[in-house]
Amino acid sequence: GNMSISETGADNEKSITIVNSSANSLIGVEGSSGNRFVGSAANNMFMGTTGADGIEFATNNTVRANIAANGLTSFNGIVDILNTTDATAVTDGALIVDGGVGIAKKLFVGTDITMQTGTAVFQNLDEAPLILISGTVGDKELIDFQRNGGAASGSLTYHQSPLGFSMGTDTGHTFRLKAGGTDRLTVQTTSGNNVVIADGLTLTDGNLVVAN
Image (tube, rainbow, N blue to C red; front, side, top):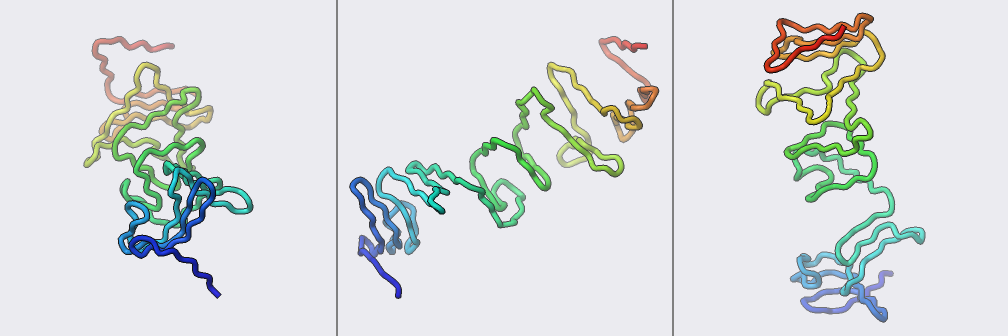
């Protein structure tokens, strides 16, 4: 049958207290006013310590989760969140984090990434900080700058160092700069290494040098 061990504490709390020479731990049910731990609700089950001691959870003689006395929680193993709720803001989704996130290794995202504010900073300059890979069918827009609320384009600015574009060694590809929906500058990776500038070219306070 079932075994019942109870201790009647303040406000009808029921709990098991485990004591050694230096620490107490408790497993139980809150009283009608939730008085065991500050902020706990009435009749909730609780597990906790009364001193500056943490809680460990173990399987196969190995600690899998640890909650330190200061609230730091660590997991030794893979954490799999099965909820599939999508995110539409920083306050919803299957995982909601109020603070920042530190990730030591790779991050794979299966769909869109949205930044509401702030700046994306790439600090590892020894390697290409951003690599964009298009699909294999048709022309793909790798970067599309748009002003919020309209189709007018924004700008791409690079400070202090040259900005380079590389299309590799394959032939038959074209790099295009457009304005008003029209190609204004194209660079073609053909045998002639053609550079085509649409309409006229105007320079202000500078010179244009064209190598042979």
